[in-house]
Length: 179
Image (cartoon, rainbow, N blue to C red; front, side, top):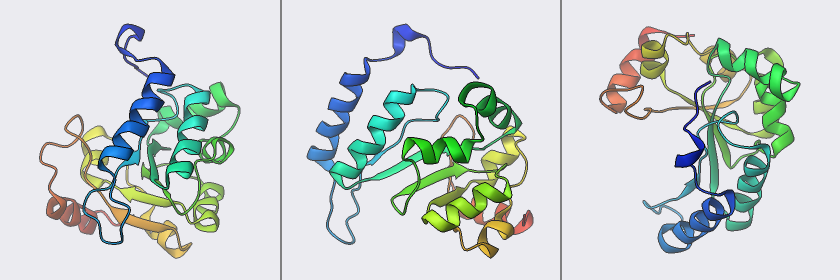
């Protein structure tokens, strides 16, 4: 798993303080607000355990949502037990990254236990079929997640894995690759 060099990474305290600054300056907490800030480290393997825990606490304290990528490919599934001693869903739960204010992008490779965890904890999943296709990650088990009452939404990913950011293209792809 490739991460940016340490010379490009801010100290964790600065990251958290700037996140608070952005939430205070821009987050609209009112119902229906069109300006929401979420706390969103890229993935559990790209930041430290402490930063993931602190991000979860910060989001709860500030009343904002949490987002990260989880269980998105075979490498992620292999990395988690090797480095964290458990599957990605269990690690997310251990970090405080489950609940109705949390959503995980992609989730192409969750097992039945993780699907049950997401359903039980009301953790959402952002299904990103165009990115999954482009990256060769596979097809997310959307039908199994929906059958288990996991909250599944449709999402577009960033420019590193999606050329257009077109929600209609995502809907078209999701319809073609029901999984």
